[in-house]
Image (tube, rainbow, N blue to C red):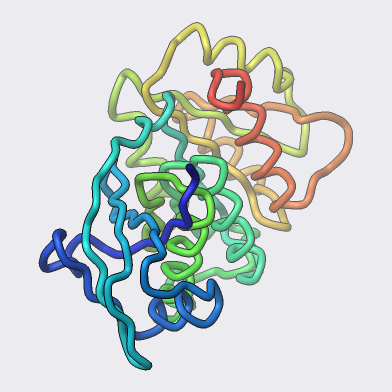
Length: 253
């Protein structure tokens, strides 16, 4: 039987045996989902398990539920995917985060680059970071994944590349809209031969990457990879790349 799933951070659960829910989540359960006493739902808390609860009491302000059981959730498929994203217009980031949660991306690492929409990481407001966290949690509930995608603070491309590939089980993919000798299918087959535990995808913003940055990628062992003759929007490229990687590695089969 499939149950509705809701996300609560494990640090907010004081006693797993008896759950107390109020605030926005309570109103969502009562007013949107129309749950009542006796209805059951699952809680996801960032751990590889789902907790099943039954509502025992409900008022106009909160509800109480008792734990019935728990079940393990499937482990994330390998390789774990990191989306290193040159910051586009921020509403696009909202959409990209939601789809990356659904597709099983492990983390998103935003960065600023020569042609990114934002040129300074400090331009991202605390309110935007809070919004990204809420989008992540809502998409986690919808998709039912056990772990929570992490959106890291934005840094520069130089800092990003300096932290890449410190582990021999990590591979990288650098799609580029300009001249590239390697096409995406060939690059993916080479990556599969490595059988990496972790794969980074570097995606440019609306302006792409500068020649200087292409040279920087090369110094870190990342050759430009072509996705074809058509130039994709940044949000399309993100979804297409993750979907192809997941399919080729068996996660969507």
